[in-house]
Length: 286
Ligand code: G3H
Ligand code: ZN
Image (cartoon, rainbow, N blue to C red; front, side):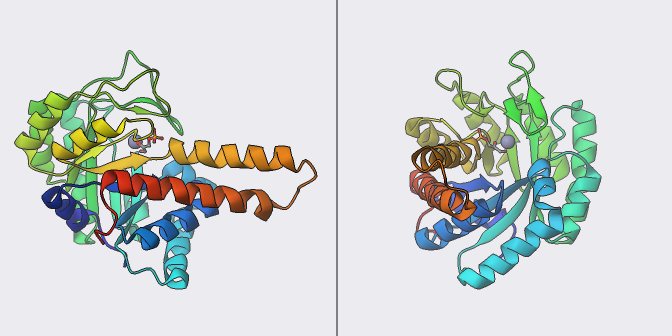
C-alpha cells in the first residue's frame, strides 16, 4: 500500500538497512520499480523530480500511474511517492494535493534561517496530510535536471546547523550534503563519514544519501551503519536503460517498435533496482 516514508525509514534505522529511492523518468521506470519491489518483498520509494513529473504530464499523472499500476500488479509492499528536490512551498503543496505521500523541500541554496522557515511551512502542511518531509543542508554537487552545483559550490553540511534545522522544523528525515554527487563520480566518492555520524547523533532522524549511483558497497554499508536509511538512485538506471536501447537498435537497425527496445530496457532497470535493494539490505523487509 501507499504510505509516507516515516515508518519505512524508522524501521530501516532500527533494523540496519536502507530503503532505495528510485527516480522515475518514463513509464518503464514505474513498472520496473514496482515489479522489483514486489518480487524482492522490499519497501520502495518512487522518486519524482519536478522535471520528471513535468515530462510525464504533471503530478496527477504520476500518482494515477502509480495507483493504477499498484492495483494491476496487486502490490502488497509499502510504497511511497516522493517529490525529489522540491523547489518551493507551492510545488510541495501541489504534489501533496495530487496524492504524493512524501516531499523533499530543498532549501539548501538559501541561508539557514530561510531554509528553516521554508521547511517549517512545508512540514506544517505535509503533516496535516500525513505526508513525510525530507530537508537538505549543504550542497550536493553534480547535476540533476535543472539543478547544477559546480564543484566549488558543493559544500559539506555543518553539524550544528543540521541539528538546528531538524529540531526547529520537525522533518521526518534529513539529507546532509557530505560529499556525494548527482550523476557519475569523478574518481572515488569521498564521503564525510565522521560528520555523518555526528549529524545522526545530534539529530536522531534517519539520514538520506543522495547521489547513490557509483558509491562502492563498503561505503554504502558504512553509511547505513551510521544512520543512513534512504539512498537515492537515478543515473545508474538511466545508464542501464540507455545501454540496452543502444544495443538493441545496433543489432536491429530496422527496428522501430518502441516495445521492442524499451521492453528489454525495462528488464534491465528492474534488474538494476533488484541489485540495489539487495545491496541496501531492504529485500524481504516489506
Ligand atoms: O535525488 C536523486 C538522487 O540523489 C540521484 O542521484 O542520479 O547520482 O543516482 P544519482
Ligand atoms: Zn538528489
